[in-house]
Length: 148
Image 1 (cartoon, rainbow, N blue to C red):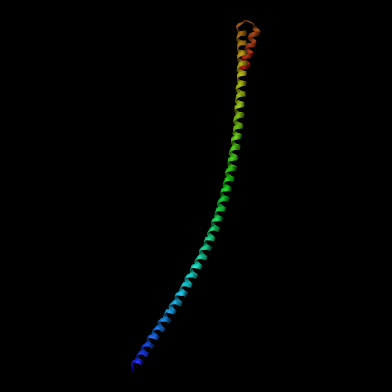
Image 2: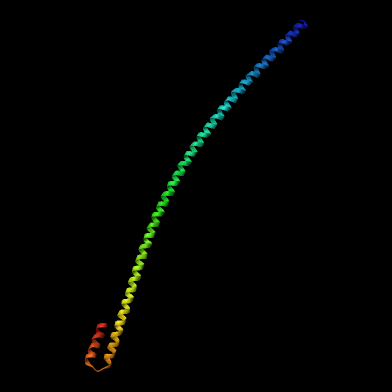
């Protein structure tokens, strides 16, 4: 074999090696592009899933807030009704207290009038009993008997 043939054979080997290297680089590039596309798809899918999940959570949060607001309104209504009932009970008890106070005052006034009347009768009887008049003594006994 001559040097030219050796040179051609060597160039052929180098060319085949370079072609092989280029083909392997091309395959790696294609695999890299496919991996990049898969990663991009995964990212897009993940973004969609994340957005859907976020939207679902927002909807649940809005629903919970609405339920909470309704519960607070119901609680406010119940407390308002209880407060009104308590205020009504206070009004009624205040009226009853005023009535009892008024009745006690009337009873006290009656008692004072009765005591004054009794004092007048007693002084009248005392003045009658001092004398010897039989009529005065009889009236005194009758009054004593009636007041007892």
